[in-house]
Amino acid sequence: MLGITCEGGASRTVYSCGVLDKFLEEDIMCDYFVGVSAGIAFGVSYISKQKGRNLSLASDFMPTSKYMGAHHLFRPSNRSYYNLDYAFHDIPCELLPFDNEAFAAYKGQVKAVVTNVETGQAEYLECPRDDEDFMLLRASCALPMLFPMIEIDGKRYLDGGLADSIPFKHVMAAGCDKNIVILTRPRGYVKKDEPLLKLIEKRYRKYPALVESVRTRAKRYNECIAELEELRHEGKVFVFSPKHTFGVNRTENDRKKLKRLYDYGYAHAEHEMQNLKRYLAR
Image (cartoon, rainbow, N blue to C red; front, top):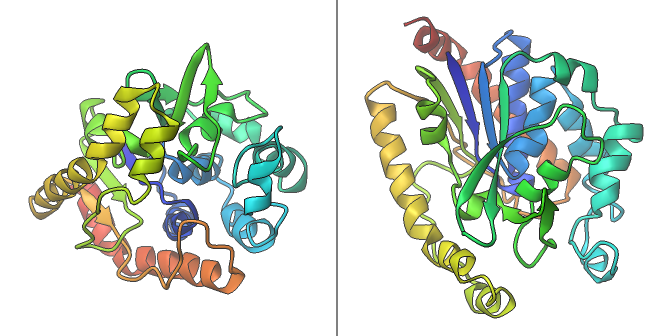
């Protein structure tokens, strides 16, 4: 059983979009997909087999002020750096249609990682096949300070990466004997402590378990990367990570930079394709 794990990274995740589009071109479809934050928000287009959809999103929508910008934070109905209803409803339902029928027809499992604000723990929730407002994807992407908490079934959630940035162990525990992990940071990257920790501690002081997850995130992330690297050396996982991110930051909206990173992801997957197929055939 083939599992794919996609790290988040907001705009940096366009690298993963290039990788996944090459997978679609080569007819590589997983049985179990888990994504964190933008890893799942973009990843569902891979599951629906819409090659090029994420490139269109990055080229035609993300660079606009209607999609993202600080001005959206101050709208009481939005309270996010991103224009949530536009990004998660208007675009997939009208402007760049998401193929709900193809998504519903997928026979495997698709899970989004979210962080429960009460417990500070990760939850791995099956993506509904009939949610036109994509509330679970919003929850997985809900960066602290840049998003409101997203409520689902009476629980409040924030970005899944706070509790489990690279959930490959969840995928392996589900029974996947072949695993592809797509990272959005270069190999050798070492995460540092959250620079906004003091502000986060103040804003989310009613949620001490959440604050503790933020406080320990860098340490847990770096340990996760070290474990993943060992598994890669042992041939147990196949890891894609960019050698360069070309200056693309979390909230990047420069069209040329985004296209360059997407193209790099596609070319990287193309370059590694024979090695990947040998790994999958073992």
